[in-house]
Amino acid sequence: MKGTLSEAELHFLKQRMVGGRRNKAGRGAFRIRLPVGYVWEQGDGIRLDPDERVRDTVGLFFRSFDRIGTAMGVARYFEDNGQPFPCRDGWGSLESAVTWGGLGVSRAVAIIRNPIYAGAYAYNRHCQEEVDREEPGVCGRIVIRDAHPGYISWEQYERNVSCLVENRDLYGGMRRKGSAREGRSLLQGIVLCGLCGRHMQVHYGSDGRTKYACHTPMTRRVCQVVHGRYVEPLVEDELLKALNPEELELAIRAMEKLQERAEELDRQWRKRLEGARYEAEKAARRYHQVEPENRLVARTLEKDWNERLEEAHRLEKEYLEARQRPPCKLTSEQRQIIVSLAQDIPRLWKAPTTRNSQRKQLLRLLIEDVTLRNVDDSWSTEVAIHWKTGAVSRHMARRVVPHPQTTAPEVVTRIRETYQVKTDLEIAQTLNAEGHKSGYGKPFTVGGVAHLRERGGMKKRN
Image (cartoon, rainbow, N blue to C red; front, side, top):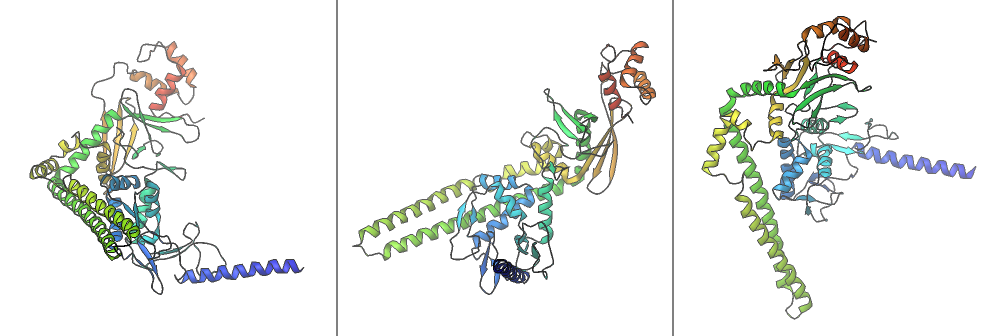
C-alpha cells in the first residue's frame, strides 16, 4: 500500500510540474529552443539576434526561397555564391559565439517549417495536436502568434509550408504538382486526366518522346495515354501569346530583380569582410598586449593573428572575383542583351541558356493546370488550359501528318458499338471474321482491342 501511494504521489508531482510548465508556456514565458536568428533575453523574452550579419543572412534565406521556391534550390544558391549560414546555441544564449558553415537541404527545410520565424511562440511544436492553453494536463503544442518580431509574416509562413508540400510529387498518399525539374516534359506535374480527373504521370521513351499516362491507383490499369509532342507545342504557343503584351514590363522587372539580387549579395560579402577584419584586429590587440618576454604566449598569439589576416585576405580576393560574375556585375552589352531577350519572349524561351526548370517555372506563373482527353478521332486530343486568373481556354491538338498505321475509323466505330455486350476476345474474333485488319495489316488480338478501346475512352462497366 505504501509503495502504491508513493508511486501515485510521484505521478501527481510530475503532473503538477508538467502543468506548471505548460501554464508558463501558455504565457510565452517558458524558455524554448530557438533557431538561429533569435536570442533569449532575461525579462524581455525572445528577441532578434543583435548580430546584424546573422539577421541579414536569415532575411536573405527567406527572400531566396520566395524567389526560387525549393529548399534544395536555396541551398545551392548559397553554395554557388559562397555564402555561409550562421549557427548559434539552440537555447539562444548570447554567451555562445556564432559559427558559420554550409547550408544543407535538411536544415533549409527545418528553417522553412519553423513557425518561430513568423513571430509565433511555439511550445512542443512537433506535436500534431494543438490544445487549449488553459488545460495544463493535456499534451499538445501551444502556438502564440505575434509573440515577438518575425522575419516573415504568418501568411508567408503558411505559403512557404504549402510550397514545400506541393514540391513533393506524392505527399500523404495524394499526388501533387511537385517542383519544376530539368526533365524534357513541359507540363510535368500540372497535367490532369480529362476522364477521371487524376494527375497524369510522365513517361520518357527511349526515342526522347514524352507521354502522359493515367493509371488507376489500385489496379494500375491504363485510363488513357497522351503523346506530349502535339500537346506541348500548343500549350507553348498559347503561353507565348499571353506573354506578348507584357514584354516591356517584363524587361524592366528583370533588370530590377537582377539589381536587387546583386545588391543583397554584395551586402552579404561586405558584412562577411567586416567580420573577418574585426577578428584580425582583435587578434592584433591580443598580440600587442602580451609582454614581449613571454615568448610562449606571444608565438601562439602571433600565429593566430597571421591566420586571421590570411582569412581576411582570402575573403577579399574571393569578394573581388565574385563581383566580376553576374549578377554582381553586368556590362552595358549584357544589359542590352537582357532587355532585347525580354522583349523577344520566343527567342528567350528557346535560348539554349534557358533551362527546362526555368521554362516550367514561367509556365506555372500563368497556368494552374492542363486537362487532356483523347476524343473519338484517335489522333486528336482536347486540351483545356486552366489559367491562374480562373479562365479556361479549350483547344484541339491534332496530328499534322496522318500516321500510316492508323486503325480505320470504321473499326473504332465497330468496337464502340459492341464493347458493352462483348468481351475483348469476342470483339477481336468478330473483327477478324469480318475481314478487318489493324493499322499494321495484322489480325486483331485481345491486347490490340483493349488498347483501341481504352484510347477511345470506352471503359468496361463489368
